[in-house]
Image (cartoon, rainbow, N blue to C red; front, side, top):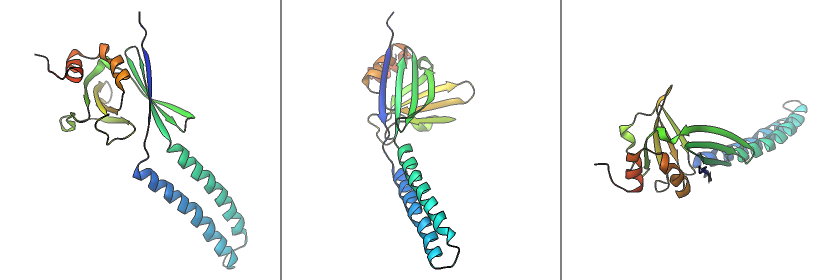
Length: 184
């Protein structure tokens, strides 16, 4: 029996929100200790505020490192036989498995350019792609979960991962996705 094991890493691109948070943290790390030092030098408050400012500065340097490293995320897709496993890797140190699903349960799998989002009422949507706006490389998968109901996955599998899914997908999905035609 042929065992299938394919994996792919997709690096998440930094968004405007990520950059904004990072700049905000840097501004806080600079302004809060500076305020404490200015208050202490003006004899408005106790000189112990200088010690507090130094502590906050060291804590702030750690906070900048923490925020920056946690914005460095990747998604890993693993196709093991008929199971798709999507994991999130944070700062190349911490791995969290987001979903483990049998691809036979997919009701639909389409490119993002052809997907009609309006006809589905998702209870939960998992976004595991490098760039949400890249409609050329992203795919939507629709499946039904026992507890949550109708769920969706937005991900960016390459040709190897799609090829590994192909034998286990519904024949209607295979015809539509790979051969660009409908079942008669």
